[in-house]
Image 1 (cartoon, one colour):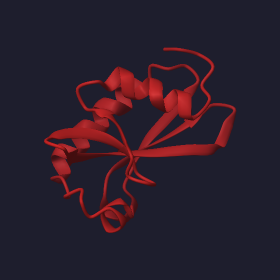
Image 2 (cartoon, one colour):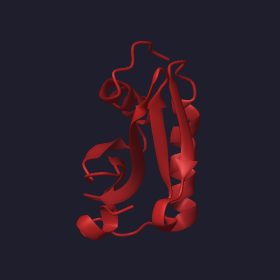
Image 3 (cartoon, helix red, strand yellow):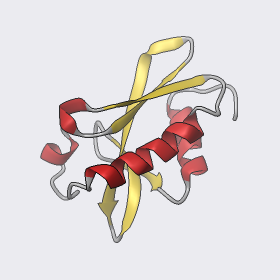
Image 4 (cartoon, one colour):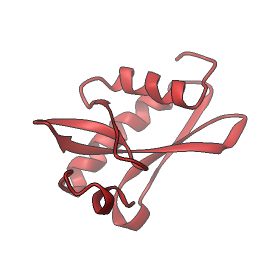
Length: 105
């Protein structure tokens, strides 16, 4: 996952802590009936891969980063912050919007 190479302003988070945040997001995403997800470990980092059912070729990967004095979920591809880890439901809504979700959880 190139986020830490391309965006070095985000320090690497400890693996267990990162897995905990990603696992929390995994559980929340799995409640949405038209989204499917799985935890992946590209290049040794942990991320959540999310697709919208019916459109499996369109996917997003999300990771967690420490930035601006808080912990955030961020798009793994470009490092853009999505929302804080304290707002898992809001982050899931943004993921669903990005994937064109039609059903709310």
